[in-house]
Length: 286
Ligand code: NAD
Image (cartoon, rainbow, N blue to C red; front, side, top):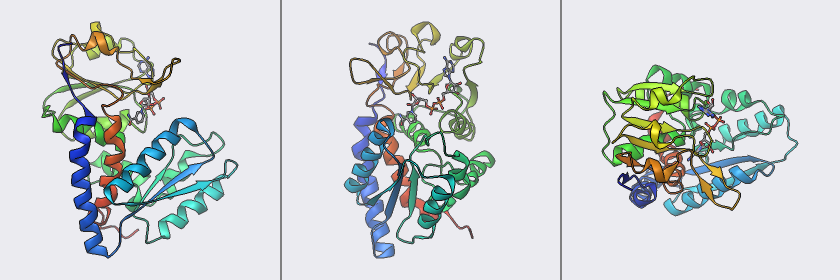
């Protein structure tokens, strides 16, 4: 392997230490710890792992974490009522609704009802609009983690050619707008893109968030490029791999994130950082 390893795990403790200071300052300003509410609906093994990770990180940095477990058969109205109660609860500064929702629920309920002031995963309509218009905004924590990793390893963004493989509302699209606002030239590929490699091969930075193991192979990467792997794929033998064929790409790339240990460890920390910034970020009436 010739590429430099961009390790989220290695920088997580530095970020945690910064968050502990922010949590202490919050406590000083308000006379109580900042509060996080994580809304779950039924049991979903894949995202339950993230929920546990988020609550554990909250405890480690000094944020009070509450699990709001809604029943599997809750309907849109019940979800709406649950979110409204959290919007009105002054002891809660940040709300994260576990995604994806069960198929019988309408994801728009969360996007429309979640208070933008508490939207620490940047999924509300207001957050999306702010990001699009380049106003201060909460952003999806995964996207914040990607940018944090690149910044901490001093990978420049301005003027760079970046290709993102994946165009979802939670990763690819918001990340494209974040990188655009950092003056990168951004291409977004998706399942209908005719030749993904044509775009990735031209890029200084390739970010893959598609959910397909081994999607990015060495022949798709320019020598010396930076490769960020957001993918999480559970393998039959147990454990997880990303979307990048790590061993071969690491011999071509200049820098690369591992899976696990790359973007993943920073994601809950970015949600918590936004929670701790909530009282200073917003000057909204709503
Ligand atoms: P999604 O299924 O909502 O979107 C996948 C996107 O990839 C779509 O735009 C699709 O068109 C595109 N795509 C799929 N196959 C493709 C292919 N062969 N070529 C080109 N484009 C292709 O997924 P998502 O929620 O955006 O998540 C993407 C991946 O990132 C998943 O593996 C998920 O588990 C992971 N993820 C990681 C974190 C983290 O913190 N590390 C957070 C969220 C999601």
